[in-house]
Length: 224
Image (cartoon, rainbow, N blue to C red; front, top):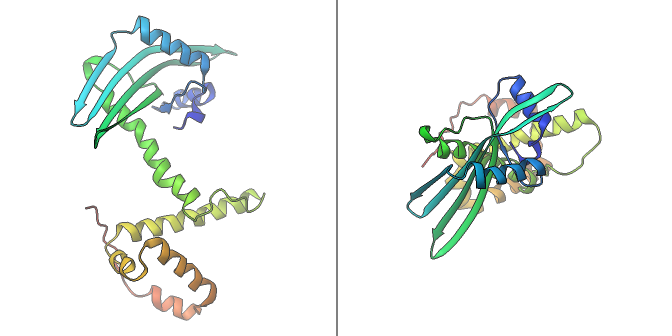
């Protein structure tokens, strides 16, 4: 989950439903807990350290268990573990270092060597963000545009947006049209704009639409 969900109520909901979670953890999300983690990491759990080197990627893992046991109004979010990964990537003589930190209720047992596995799961959120929501916000889908204040209308708009995005991904990943589209229009985005204009100015009759939809076709996905 996104760092916005690093809070007690969300953790309580996960525990109540028996859900495992990985939540992006930043200093501003839960400041006291983050400071407590840093203190535990540097003193109590200073031996919780693992380093992995794979080609041009170096990952250093630090972690602390049982960081938080919060109780308020007879409710408890239970035990919270924190996993940190400092990743250094060297390519073309340039080095980039990124720091990742997660709240989790996964048991981070050093004997199981699960650090890379857990961190890999946490980083999938960025893939969802960058290839999903980010595209919908900045890829001409206008997700952030305030069309109205009617919650039902907003939901309907987002359903249609999701359908459009799915169709677009099928076209981009499929082998049916992508080569011809790029040859004629230069890019998928140019094709999409042309398609939008055709929908604005050319009206298909119901019969014509039914005739087109009655023809069998197949989209084969290209994973190369």
